[in-house]
Length: 151
Image (tube, rainbow, N blue to C red; front, side, top):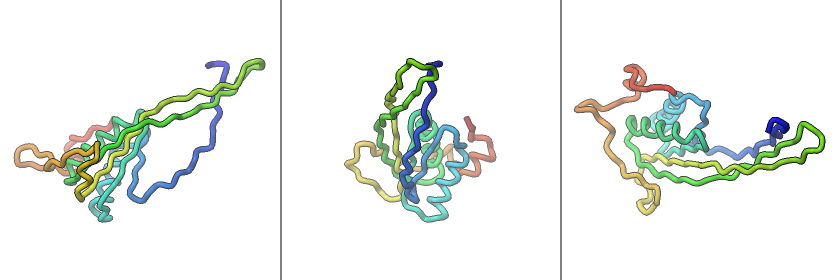
């Protein structure tokens, strides 16, 4: 592929809902956790949706598990895939234009204060907040006591 360069296509701007957080592999976990917990605790949002694609999926799962340690929530997970088509133009004459299609995994995790549809396939049963003995983990403890590790 050294004889080709990828053609940048304009991205489709899909509107983001007020309660939706799109996780990227470049974003800092601390920022996502802070924003999500502030939405749930300060803005009185009953539900947030975290979405990610590809390499950001594992980060999203870690973020969700940390948020669930802070706020008692119900969880529903939906997984799928998306096809992304890349166009490559040749750098030399005589070569043809190439199009490649990638299948990228997609995850959407809904966290809610209220009970979710119990018939949903991706429903995760609610558990009480994680605790260590009589000590319940809070967000401030995760950051201050170095229990939180940034990748």
